[in-house]
Length: 178
Image (tube, rainbow, N blue to C red; front, side, top):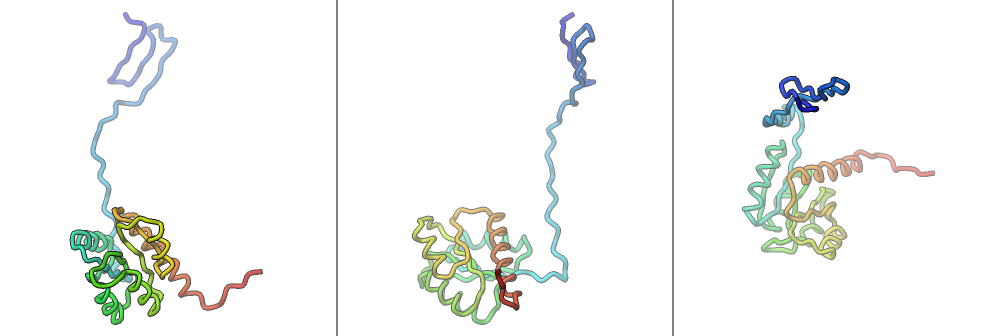
C-alpha cells in the first residue's frame, strides 16, 4: 500500500504506519450565500430627505431608486434654477449637486444654497481635477464625490455630512478649550 492515505469520507489523512494522523476539515461545498436585505426603517423613524440636482436621467433615476431603497425620501430636479426654487419651499437634509447643469454654474448654485441655509451639499460629478474639487469645497460644498461611485459610499458620505451638521445644529453653547 502507498505510504500515505487519504480518506475523503472521514476527512482523515495519515501515513500507513499510524505514527502520523491528521484530521482535516470535511470537503467544502460551494453553496450560494444569501445576504438578508437590510431591515426596513421603523414606521416612527424620521426619513432623511434628499434633493438630487442632476440633468442626466440615466444617472438620476437609478440614483434616486437606490436612495429610496435605503429608506431616503428623494426629490429630483434637472436645473440649478429648479434646485433653488425647490429648496426655498422645502427643507432638505442633504443636496446632491452635479457640476454640469444646463442653466447655471454649479458653484453659483452651491453658493446660493449655502447663503440660505446650512443644508449639507455633496457635489456629485465626473470632474476629478483638483481645481474643481478645491473650488467646489471652497464655495460651500461639504463633500465632493467623483463619478462613477458606489451607492454604499454615497450613503456613507450622506450619513457623515448629516452627522456633522446635526452635531453643529445641536450645540447650544460654544465649545471652550483650555
